[in-house]
Amino acid sequence: MSVSLLKKSISVYKPIFVWNILVSLLASAFFILNGFKAPAIYSFALFLKLTGWLFSIAIYYMFYQKTIYYFKNQGIGFRKIMINLILYDLIVFTAILILSLICRDFLSIALANLLQIEKY
Amino acid sequence: MQRLFIDSVSKSFANRKVLSSVFLNCEIGEVVGLLGRNGSGKSTLLKIIFGSVKADFKYLNIDNKIYDKGYLSKNLCYLPQDNFIPNRVTVAVAIEAFCKIHKEKLLQIPFVSDNLGKRFRDFSGGECRFLEALIIIYSDADFILLDEPFSQLAPLLIEELKRHVNDLKLFKGFIITDHYYKTILDVSDRIVLLHNGCNYEINNNNDLVLHGYLPNLNG
Image (cartoon, rainbow over all chains, first blue to last red; front, top):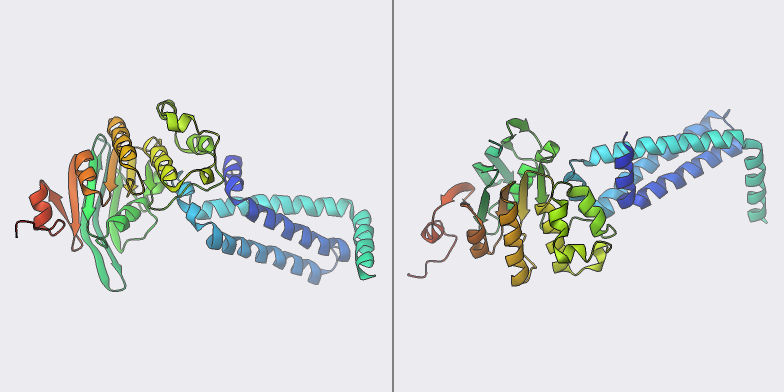
């Protein structure tokens, strides 16, 4: 895991990083609403994360393939960049989950109220 | 002696043999010009050396180490035909990423020092090409592969780029391919022609006519 590689890759692949954070927030919303005791829900949340990473690769191939030489000329391959991004994303995801666990009561009331407001 | 050496390169596309047992070498202090007709495999050969295209077979040796992909040596830079520096990156950031050893020399070029804060999207196509070529030429790598560096450039910029290649030749080995064959003949110490999937050493214009690269104007 390299911080300098993360900085370099975020400067180019910012949308991919933001996309992964949004997926992490969505996945953590499932945890908050249904708790950590419902295996079906957190399996689905983890499945969401996996799908999010697959979409990241798809976004890369659709929009960023031209940047391949920018990194390869620095001796960095696609696999190294993606593994680094995913590892840092895992840290962000874990941090979001820990935060949501600590503030679970507050967040679940806030989320439930938000959903009620949207319902009416 | 530091050198790049690739041997026994074979590559086919859909049953068409583009490269067959091709070999090429380049030493520090040398400019190798690579000529060939359209579709002769010049760019493919450079991409195979760099490692972005997989050959059917090859033997690549850089500074007495064998590599599967040249870029993994971190001692090889490649200027592709299309723009490769992302649009939102500034000139200063790109220089910081690629040029640490020869940074001071690069910053002495007025066009570079005057535009350090600009992003690549703010330049015209030709300016972008010129800047990218300069960044690759002044990069920290010992071996530089340039794929059509003179295309899109005005004659004045072509002359300037040639001068920079000659200046950096002391520290680096260059392999250059382009369709501006006169420019390639001017800047190169040695010419290699790719024809019918094989490589030929070229000594004069008659050799280029003999191998069907230039038309025979004498009938």
